[in-house]
Amino acid sequence: MENLKWLLSEILNQTGAAFFTFVKYSASLAILGLMLGIVFVSVAGNKGLFRRSHGVWKVLAGLNYAYIPLLLAIIGGTFGSFYAGHVCADRFIDDAAKPLADYGQKYLNQALALVPEIPWERHFDKRVDEVLAEEVAVRLGAEKGSYAYEFYELINRTVVQYTLDELGISYAVREPLAVVNDLRAARRASGNSFAGLPKALHRQCDLFFSLKYTGLLIFFLPFLFLPIGEYVLYRLFGKKKAGVTDKSGKINWQAPKK
Image (tube, rainbow, N blue to C red):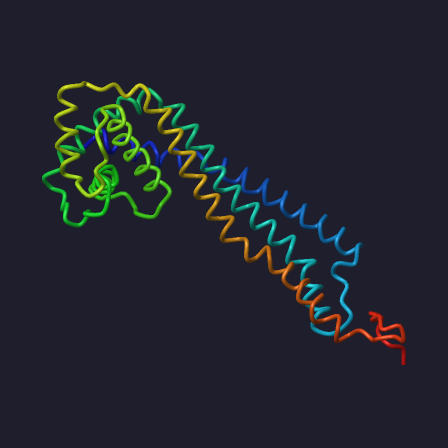
């Protein structure tokens, strides 16, 4: 299991060394978001987009001057931290390309040796690459839910996926044991090289982080639409209550003089 522990320790070391990368990108994009927010509310304010005629609408619109810059700063900082993780992961793959290729061969042999110990009935609806990655991580005591755990699983899943693709073996989602048996037989016969593993890892890494970016965007969209929603509601309902109809039938949006 020493080879498996090597990768986990390397990832944990990279996480510690990447601290300044996280700070740099998070702080930079947070400041950029804050500045963009300030510019936006300044321009929008000058154009009268936050001008309201009365009461609660004035308060809600006034909150935008603080809400929008703060929200964009938070979005920028959050995306910055994920982008920093992406940069660090790519850097790690490039720096450890040869050791990772060697690791792939050893990982596959050690993971397949664990097959008799795996409770396969718990993994009926999972692919074999997911099962092996998860079981290996659990046995090494990796902290589930951490970045290190996710990246460790990503690499181990990619090793199995890469091997299956190279050998032309079906994933057979609901027959993981059949895949394992085919994989064992094919490995003994082929002596497959893992020279192309770093490229496969880059592809999987890009996919992994693209899903993270998409998830963040979906999460923040409702918060971005709040100011828009307030403006639309004011246009639909707020102005009608504040306006005064003149003789021509048009609405005068200025408050009536006493």
